[in-house]
Image 1 (tube, rainbow, N blue to C red):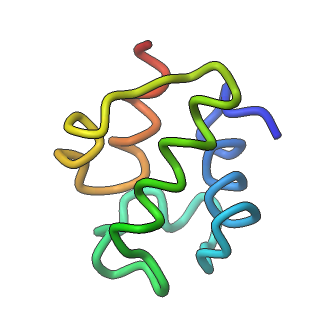
Image 2 (cartoon, rainbow, N blue to C red; image 1 turned 135 degrees about the horizontal axis):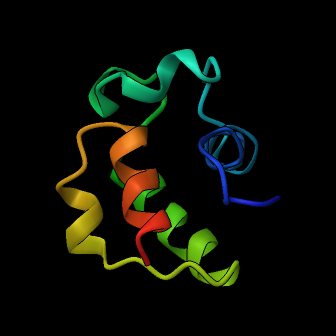
Length: 77
């Protein structure tokens, strides 16, 4: 699954992490409000991104408020 677009990034989160998302509506939803989102999913996402050639530091992702913020960090690498 490609993460070169917000849609692709959100599909990765939905499909690989099992987080129930409406794409693209939930792009700006607070992470804490996403059903099933937790710190373990954040770490799993870091691994998935690294496996796909998009390494992002955990401390940067911790500052993200929503999936759009996370995608912006991934895109900027």
